[in-house]
Image 1 (tube, rainbow, N blue to C red):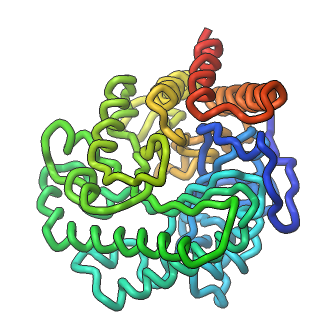
Image 2 (tube, one colour):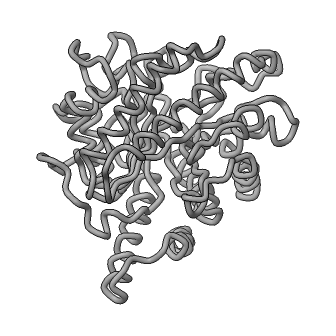
Image 3 (cartoon, rainbow, N blue to C red):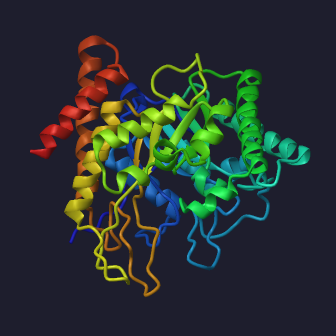
Length: 403
């Protein structure tokens, strides 16, 4: 059994990333409420270091009011809350673990941003003028802080939220269609519009270079809209909001993944996006997909084997690369779900014994080959490949890895 501990050490202020570290290799993972750890670092720092060792240049985590362990099964990013923190800017700037990870040499940060001022769903019964103002100010201040602090580094920050359909309608049950009321839809439109305006205004007002901040919404019940015309974020809200990007939490197509079905969902989401002339390339990414490994569930149904977890993930990775997703992010590095009897459900790349799973090794291999390819192109031509060139090469890496 291989116990894997992060060995990377990062301290000091963020520096400009070199061309290989700044390149977007698309593949990565995320860290939310890990149920175990192996070092004395905070869980956020430990998992971030492991992701860096894996070769990723993207990390996904949360800047949220519930950023700390709460005494239940929620482990949070850090063990305890700091009573002096009252805004996301203070959390990013003053909380040591969050600041340390933001300073690490990641090129891309995909962040669940739920403000301390208003939370995640204060808009459901209408987004009041007071809530709009407080949301705007907290998002504006965080954006300005990121732009000033990381100017010149080559970093990009994608500020968004947890599964929007979970907020808007809950499950896909038909009884929940009734939750998508006009007032809830308009409230969500207003919430996302205010957040986008805050990001845009901060970018306009804040001198910066070599750094980007973008705003995204996350959809997760796409097929009920695409196939049945039922109400969801993608067809009721997305066409009305000027977001930069869309994250697709893709379980409705990835639980039994078929490449053309995944690509069809991505096409459908893209068709609902409002134009953004200042952004080149695709604007929809796979922000979450994953497969649990472990012993049978309490109902007796089997979970996946480690090999199946890897094989299914390869299907999603390939579909994402072929379509052109900016990111394809696996859920997650360490498992966050425990059955009532205490067993780990196994949404992991590294298990609770520290053993790297095949899906981790696949990511590590593709990322290593991607880095080598980018370095070779830079050496030969003096500049990195385009993302289009890279993603075609990544499909070749996956094909070779499948043999």
